[in-house]
Length: 137
Image (cartoon, rainbow, N blue to C red):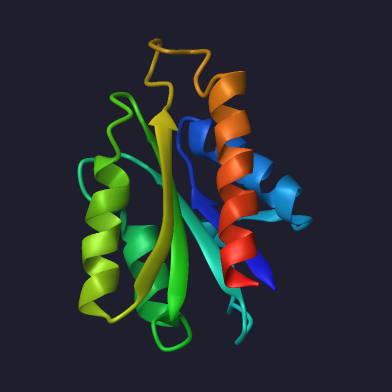
């Protein structure tokens, strides 16, 4: 079973999460409303870039670290270089949680890049979800 959980302040990560979830046939869940995750769930966890991992991401990892063995990460940022994914991955590694897939793209920031993620980037997110799901099935 797959779960797609995300934190999004500008809406870009939400769009990617919804694209991934649709590809997997599940609903994307805002991290602020997620309860416990299923014991056998494979989680796709997404975040925007907020300078460092945001408190809700850290709390989710702490609360669920005993159930998470493998995880896929996705993120959006104004630069699109993936620093948000890399910083969360470092935290997961310290908890012996393997990251089996990564996806990141540009996101909007205030009035900049209002059209990000692009349709092409959303198609790439869809392919990422499909490929990662095949690996974990």
